[in-house]
Length: 146
Image 1 (cartoon, rainbow, N blue to C red):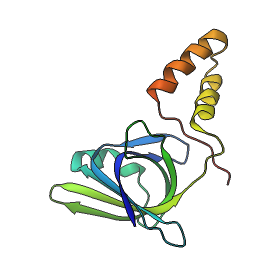
Image 2 (image 1 turned 90 degrees about the vertical axis):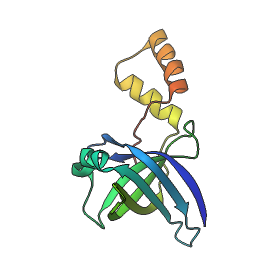
Image 3 (image 1 turned 60 degrees about the vertical axis):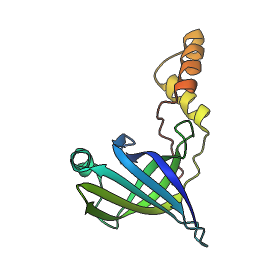
Image 4 (image 1 turned 90 degrees about the horizontal axis):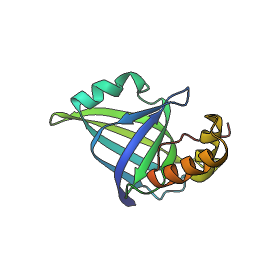
């Protein structure tokens, strides 16, 4: 098994909206098993939990998440997960997800460009927005083949 620092995590709602999980700490573990299973444990305050609890599925139900691992500058990893456990720990809440990495149809730059075009940005303005956003790395939700 290999473990990594969880930098950020967002829940992806059924209508492709991102719900930010305000982490106090987190860990992601590659189980290195035959099924390529990953475990994601997110620690958040009780207040942070109250902000997202309506976006969480029931225990043992699927949810897509995106997680940034190790460094803030890394591209997010998109995962199809199942929420396994919600557990209070010393004034915090632990969310335990189990799942698998998903391959998005496009790389980050392509997703960003598509998003900017869908916003109606064209020409030189598109180029400037693209250059600015490729550096600042805003969150962009991919589409997945179903």
